Image (cartoon, rainbow, N blue to C red; front, side, top):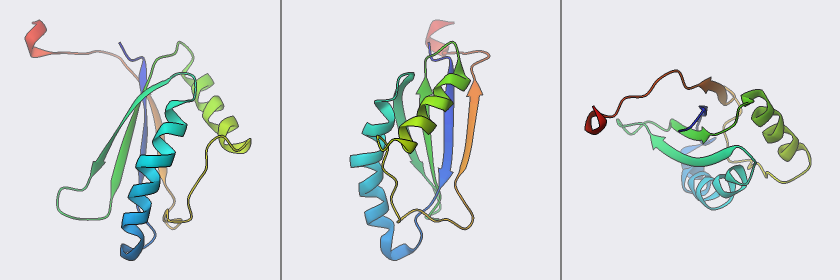
Amino acid sequence: MAKGIFLVENSPCSPEREAEFNQWYDEVHLPEMCAVEGVVSARRFAGAAGEMTYVTVYELEADDLDGVRAAISAAAVNGDIHMSDSIRKDPPSRFRILRTIGEYAPDQA
């Protein structure tokens, strides 16, 4: 069971760079993030109405979720996570770490 999620909301800096943004995210960023200890998987979502808003949900398995946040920050600082200039900076990306408090799966009821 995942202990929490790291939720990221962002978008490309322009419609012309949306393909570049998605390629970087899928081919570079997701593998780098999932290499951080405590990050076990990632799923991306796009706005259903065609807007250029993207949400990424990273599943975390760690007793210390703040430690995972610190490990992600350290990986970015020491160059293990590479950012792209195709990310919109204004407004900036939104980040949240949320802990799991319950789960329900209908087939397990």
